[in-house]
Amino acid sequence: MCGIMGYIGSKNASEVIINGLARLEYRGYDSAGIALTNKDLYINKKAGKISNLRSELDFSELAPYNTGIGHTRWATHGIPSDLNAHPHSDCKNEIAVVHNGIIENHSAIRQILQKYDHDIKSETDSEVIIHLIEYYYERYSLAEAVMKAVVRLEGTYGLIVISKREPEKLIAARNGSPLLVGIGDNEMIISSDASAIIEHTRKVIYLKDREVFEIKRDNFMAFDLEKGLVDREIEEIDWNIEAIEKQGYDYFMLKEIFEQPETISNGFRGRTVQDYGMIRLDGLRLSEEELNEINRIIFIACGTSWHAGLIGEYLIEEYARIPVEVEYASEFRYRKPILRRGDLVIVISQSGETADTLAALKEAKSKGIKVLSICNVVGSTITRESDGGVYIHAGPEIGVASTKAFTSQVTVLILLSLFLARRRDMNSEEIKVYIEHLLAIPEKVSQILSNNDYIRDIAEIYKDKSNFLYLGRGINFPVALEGALKLKEISYIHAEGYPAAEMKHGPIALIDENMPVVFIAPRDEIYSKVLSNMEEVKARKGKIIAIANQGDNDIKEYADHIIYVPPVRKMLSPLITVIPLQLLAYHVAVMKGCNVDQPRNLAKSVTVE
Image 1 (cartoon, rainbow, N blue to C red):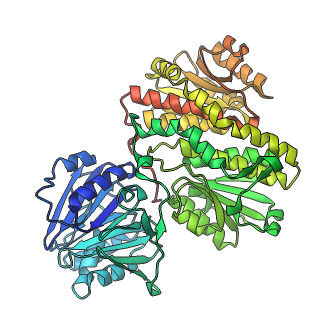
Image 2: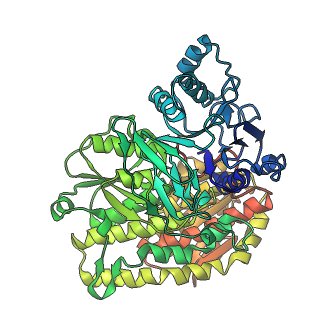
Image 3: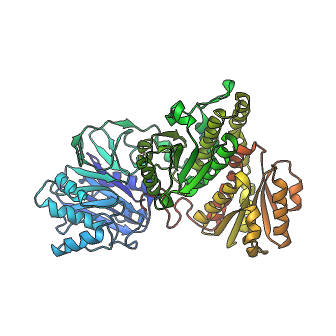
């Protein structure tokens, strides 16, 4: 959730950290703060967005500070306020910490520390960390004090600590919350996200759980809490700073919607061999025996990724004839799941750091089950913990409401279903046909995006409505769920997605002349059923927005507004039908004056339970 940043080098640390926090603000934006040291300790923190903090800082005055830490917060314990904002400092104002995560035993630690006269001022769980470090810092070096303190912590943490007694060091520790170190030229940058590091260096090290790093401007030491000093390999980020710039778009979300022709291509590029009717997914790392033994697949995910998993269920069951279940990660490990030989668990996560999904992954592995991942962020915790998987290659996604990652996940799931189907009943000639149609999808997405102005006009008509209903059938039912989620996430309008046939079992009671109903109605084998559902809405004076295939004139009799999309094979339909729903949600939210990149109460990467 929260974004944390640290710098040590020869530059003005305050400028580096504030610019880094601006790139991390999508992780949390209810308060921000900075701590700097150069034989004294300077702290400034403010509720609200980073711009509030920036306006308080005199960068020329802060130029002598070359070491510092910063934080942009998504509140868990304690309301957004100056007092609850990070960094937190000790009683003597010698050391400071920034923290991402949740300390589950903070109340017990707080009670013990208060017996030793520690003055804990905030409502946060995080402040106990710095007082615990302070307790040990009386007898040990800063690195040793941090190591002794984090052993006492239960829960998740990614944290960075500085001290005015040792201003030439940053101490970083991780357990369950992402953290990486950027190796620069006589400087080191540490952050919870590569987006804050990439403008300085591409060389990085991803901290592992229960590791503590002592970082100086020209070197570092890595300690495992059980093994002691360890060697770590330097990796390289494979994207550049342009990937996280708006490039002329008003919002990252709109930029990312318009990137989908490219990102869908990236999802299948190098993985299809059309001449031979083959799908290549080498990252799965499954032996022939393991592939042949698959009796059931369980997708585990949250939010938008869960919707992608539902589409995967339709695809794999229909084309590969393998039973599939789709589980919410947050529920999976708490309900004593039944896992057996022949089960394959596949976790889906854009960030690769989602706490619930990671916990579910570990639960499955603890039972001896093979776990694969479908993920976007290279080097993320989920990709390192899983037995194999597939990267979606969507590039950095900055908008909190996921768009391009969703279609990239669906692209990979299409490939996976074809890969498994080829091993069952589907012959190479059939695979060739599906590959041919998949390769044509990016151009069809571009055609839909060219209707952006028309979709904006529809948004103008419905922007002031309080409720929306999204209906789809078959493989487009999860698309209805995703369309409703996009609208509620960024516009704060109540929206629900349902299977169209379920409308009569409750939601139809809501329909009147003020209720917009979005139908996903491609001309497939259940098209006539969807038209019947439209008749029922129309009879109750509901307003119908239909996503329909080009050339479908029959639907004009039912719909008030039609957004036409190119006809495609059924398995590819979600890649096409979701695009207008993303644009509709975007334009409604912008017209309502919402910040679509940073919707209230949400953060991009949910790294806490």
